[in-house]
Image (cartoon, rainbow, N blue to C red; front, side, top):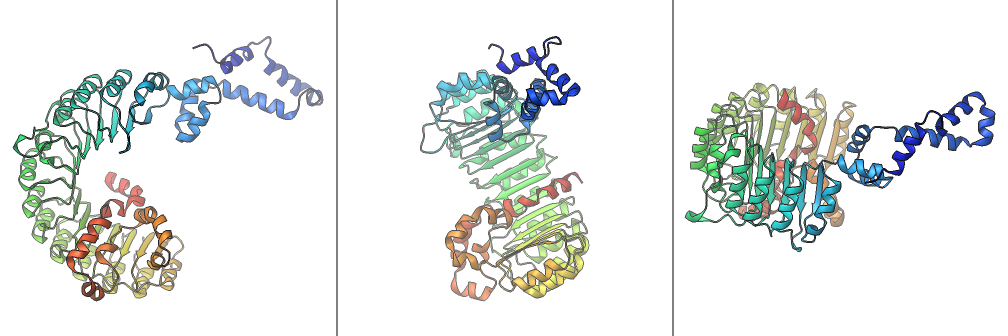
Length: 536
């Protein structure tokens, strides 16, 4: 490429004998009146500012671009040729629409963006995605790729993924969802990418069922893997060799994967010793599996979401074995198989607990009082869809939970009396969210809000949802971030009206629809506290 106009301008201005910039500056300093006659103030200011920007080194300009959002970066790139070039060379993250016609544009795209290390390729369901040729061409142009996300790339095959893995051996993070390649392609990645640290797989349809399923892993990547996340897989257990062989694995997340996981969890517990985080959601796992998990002595985070075979006995095993537990999320799915008995064991053996989320768990004052007394570092508490959490329980929390900072209450029989108790208790409380608790009125929320100036109180009685359905639809995402959407499981605050009007199976079906991401979103806006808890 030839030298850009802005660069040429900089060169001419740097000439000490003929610099128009210095002529303007000296004239302005010696004779301001004369300068004003010859040049307007805006001309002088614009010229000097232009010089300062043009004199910035490319590295400084790149740092500025990297602090901007995507839209601002695009606008900056069309200012001049130099900015266009620097913006492209300094861009490390790129997301592309992975339709089939992307193949023709790949050379020009990666000629401009030649420093990309994080790439996302996404294709919608109705379009034809890129194929092996495009992925291979990208791998040849992006040898330094460290992160790859594939979504809806249904035309990719095992052969294309295998070639990609050989060309991008420095890959550290791979996330693929709704793709068509299978075990051979996945094994190729594991056999070639020795630096792989994170693997996330969702809806990989070509992984076969039954005895014919090809095992996945461990490969050379097993020595470096730290995180494995499997979602919506017919035969997720074929990843067993990889999980068992990943000696440095610290986080295991299993969501809606078919099959009995108890036996595999027992083997994993015997081979992997450094696990600190486990998520199990809608998984066939029983107390035997929880007993296996209890062998992870360093476990700090446990999510049990809609695992109906897990009972108080299994939770006791976890509490007795995982004494360093700091975050516990339980969605009991209204089965009443986890209750005070299991929670009291947690209170007795896990003094470091900082975050507790209970959804569809009928806890009472007995367990909450013991948790408050023994878990002195409890900072974040969510009680949702419980028929037994009333004012008495809130009184207990207000009096005993000295360290509590965040409290979320949803679909519980709590009234303004509970709000009054919170107003005089929990001295470190900074945020309270109350949703669909019909006994709590705006007056109670105002009383709590006025008790201390720094306290934020969010009250949602749910009445507006019935009055204006369209408005409710528009706010679904926002509510999902703020509060765990468990109303479908617990309904209103009056348990008698619920049990009389709806059967248990009907409520369970509603829970399947409305509660998909209950636990994941509960503290999403409180992530700053999560980070401090983990590093504390």
